[in-house]
Length: 372
Ligand SMILES: *[C@@H]1O[C@H](CO)[C@@H](O)[C@H](O)[C@H]1NC(C)=O
Image (cartoon, rainbow, N blue to C red):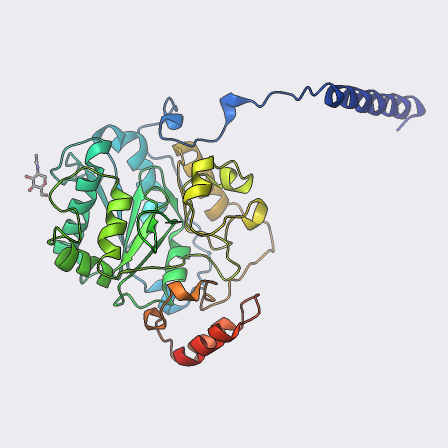
C-alpha cells in the first residue's frame, strides 16, 4: 500500500467514525429495509416469482451414508397440506426437494392430482376448514398406511424438513408408544400442543388412538365440525387421551422444529406472540437451533432450493461433523416417559445420557436407572 493510499484510508476511517458518532448522537439510525424482512405470515410469501416445474438437480453417487441401520429404518409417512392453487407453485418444489426423502409422501388437497400425488380429502378449501382437512388426512393415513409406517409427519407446503434428522431423533423412541413431537406451544392444554406450521410427527400408536378413541368421542375431540385451529384442536384431542407431548429439543435444549425461517430464529426476529406461546424459552444466535434441526416454516421456494443446495450439495472440503448416536435425550425428561424409549441392543440409554452437556441431576439419574 502506498503512503498516499494509506493516508486516504486513514482519513476515510476517521471521517466515517465521526459521521457514525454524529448520527448516533442525533439518534438517527439507518432505517431497516422493510422490503427485505423475513416472512412471518403466509401473506408475506405472496408475490414470489416461482417456476411451475421442479429445478434441475443431480445426485452424488460417492456420498457416504453413515447413519446406523436402526436410524435408516425408521419409516416416516409425510402428509403435506396444500391447495390446488399451490400444486404447481409450492407442492412441486416440496416433492423435488425434501419431500423425496420421505418413505411415503402424500399431498392433502381439495383436488386430485395423480402426477403430484395429491388427493382430494373432500372437505373443500380455505383456512377455515384446516381442521377438517387434518382429520381427513389422519383418517386417510390410518385407513391405508397405519401398519406400513412408524411415524406420521405433518408439514405445510412452505415447510422445509430434514428427514435424516427426523429419523435420527425418532430412532430412540418406540412408535408403539402414544407420543408426538413438534414445535411445542404452551396454550390450551396443560402439556400444550404442537404448532402446525413447524411440522409435527405422531407415533403410530398416537395416530391409532386418535382415530379409534378420541375422534369418535365428542367429549374428547371436536369431531363434528371442520372449523377451528387445526393444531390446537389436535392438541386437545391428543391431550384428552393421554398422548404425550414430547420434548423434541436436542440435549443442549436447542429446538428442532421451528415455525419461522432459520434467519428469523437466528436473529430473534420472532413476533411477540411467539414468545407468549412457545413452551421452552427459545435462544437466538447459533444456539437458536439444533445441529440436528428438523423443520422450518415460511420457507418460500427460493429458500427451499437454497437450503437444499446448502444441506445436500455444498461441502467445505475435508470437514466432517458427526452427531452422537443414538441421539442423546432432551433436557425435559418429564416429557419423555421412559416407556417411550426404544431399547437398542448393547448401547443402552445411560450411554446416550453421558453425552449430555448438563450435569445429570438426581431425579434424572433415578430415571436413567429405571430405563436401564
Ligand atoms: C379422487 O380420487 C379418489 C381416490 O383416489 C376417488 O375416490 C375420487 O373419486 C377422485 N375424485 C375425482 C373428482 O376424480
